[in-house]
Length: 238
Image 1 (tube, rainbow, N blue to C red):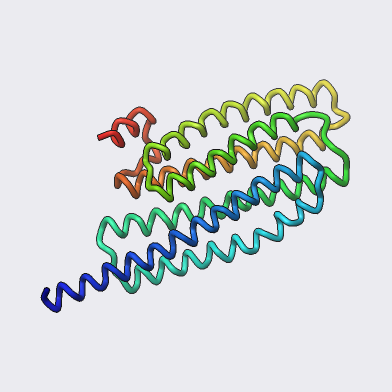
Image 2: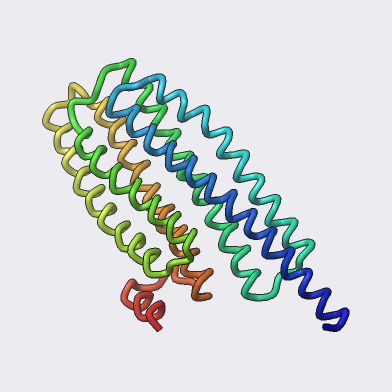
């Protein structure tokens, strides 16, 4: 092996090590964010003000991890000068990192609303729907992170398809709650709070879908953000 070959081999090994450390940190952050979502939903459904505060305090750790990942990716770009396929992975992780942090932000929103409702009194409607959509969203987030860990494009596509179901259920539930408020305006402020919770959950689903899009980008090298599911399914099966 020539000196030049040894040099590139060393760079490749170091790049892989650096990137693996970032992936590990990203997945750790994912576990923390998933916990935030679970706890925020619990705080709402069980009127647990203490748990709501825990979710809000956890957000500082999530934000710190997001910053660590961004800084590590910048160092990789500056020091390793990755080739095209490796650069694609760095870009994808950077974008997924932002979406993961925003899921945490949405969990904080739910926690703050849960804290408010625990003090003002529960909403008469919307909790059953919040529980159901919340469970679906948590599963989406878990599956998106699992697809990322295993570089599984097929599972990433399934997460994207699940987001369409959540969007439909969110729209249907919102219409029902608006009708309820028009018929009985006594609880408008509390029902609106629950609607904001549902909106936060719907946004979490969008971010989980975005993470899944980045998984497909890493695996297949294709930007599928504006592509139909049928075309994506055809491309990942090739």
